[in-house]
Amino acid sequence: MRIGLPVLLAALLVTPACAKKAPSCEVPATLPRPMLEGPSVDQPRRLLPTGGYTLAVSWSPQYCIDKSSSPQDHIRCGGANSFGFTLHGLWPDGEGALWPQYCKPTRLVPDKVIREHLCSTPSPQLIQHEWEKHGTCMSKTPADYFAKSGKLFAELAFPDMKALSGRTMTAADFQRKFADANPGMRPEEMRLNVGKSGWMEEVWICLDKQFHRRACPAHQGGAAPGQVVRIR
Image (cartoon, rainbow, N blue to C red):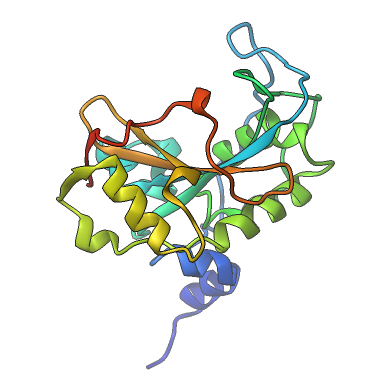
């Protein structure tokens, strides 16, 4: 079977880590240009000591339920692409309830860096946001920050989500299934972000200062073990 040039070029743009996470991902030839965000009154700059990290992964079938026509989410939710879990971000946590954010002024993330990580985080604007809000507090360059978060994301394995789709279970049940897919992981090393209607939206993995998994601090919240969650 002959492979068309556009498909071949798209395949070459997908890194091995991206290909592992996205059943189908083509990087468009032209990407929307992200905008600088910066701190605001509601999201101020905070220079605080780092007490650990959170690796947040988002479940795309739930995220995209009402965003198929959203221009900002077209790469993730529209067209021919197909995503399961995607990388929301790697966030520095504080030593208490507050965390550092928007630690230094910065510029737009280079197009090359966006393209390298678009199949893990399929939104140029989200990539820009993650660098400005979180990455500036832990890395010198966007390339360093996304290399670290991309490596941690690539090391994750996921349960058989097709088998879980449409099922209702407790948060503790899902956490056990997620942990079982990753040797050595314990359910208490993650927390679930569940929407008001009970649909599971994100999994947040708790890490120490050396990026090793740890039990999530109690003040970080998340779904209670007995909370009923639904999987899209």
